[in-house]
Image (tube, rainbow over all chains, first blue to last red; front, side):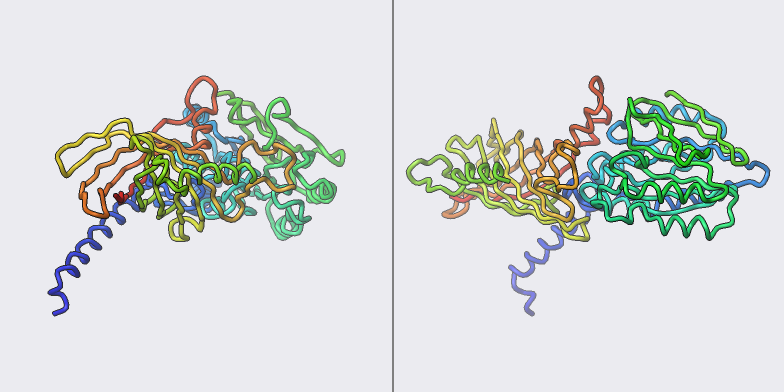
Length: 280
Length: 193
């Protein structure tokens, strides 16, 4: 009876009209709410976990060599990443790509999506470690939603990979970035034969908490089977680079960056490392 | 922050000054907008210059959590409308609107000036202030009654300084496709007599 009111009926149809439009527009990611938004209708989630499970599903007992395409600092160089994907897809046997931080430059959702859209074209999975640029703006939340936890491990063909956040400056050097107790726990409660660490900042750089360097490298030196520590962050002329601590044989390798159109192909064979620079 | 305040004071003269004498911005409008990079929903106040080719707007936008927020945004908009077509006595079209808008965004981990933990010019961009350019078009329904002059609907495409810097990462060629850095918004305005 109240519905006889023509104004109410008009209002109802107007509300339906607006509702349909909003549903239409929110399903399209080209309607941007804010460059700093952390989510939209196309943003994937838990990519690292999904890519790791894809990697593990291809694990075969007959082949115990691990081949990693190792690069970092893809920030802003989208076309060069296109070139990388095209080049490396021709290589016959690569297990995964490790992008060692600075996926984005400004910590914006769109940047993460632009990188993901390109790396999705790889014939093999890719795994992303968090870099200092990825922690600017709302990047920390975006990384966690899109890729997962900042500290994570996986074991592939008896190699345990410890990917972790060592961007100390971003947290104003709190003393637990990198999280040495987490690393120690992951190293000691494990039955893998070999260990590889991957983090963005190399320990000799100022953005790594310099009061923690000795504890950090001592932990790695003390673990039998620890063979390699991988880093990004530096660009030419400071990268690619390699350093050693505690006069042992563990290399701390800094990748070449996407801007230079170079990356490393790392082969791990029974705990030994074969390193090859690829240009694209 | 100081320069931001000065900027605001400078433009607020145009927005809020008594215009009876000068008649610089005689026409006022109020509007709401969906998306367009200043919030999930935003609302604002507009003034038109005497020749009706220039419009200034001051908007507040909000991006709630379900839309990827929470982010508060204030925006200052400049729109230039070179031509206006009268399709019939009721319908008017502004096929081209070109302009720029500045946004100040407030959210966790966005800063007006970078915190002290970074050295000077550690990050070479402004954290929370964005500069956008826009292209749009607008269609209006003319009422010409005592209060409301016309009701308008507009569609707007924009990009911002950081997306542009991503596009131009290489000096010689584009790093992305142009369409990848362009995003849309729609809105409606009511122009008062």
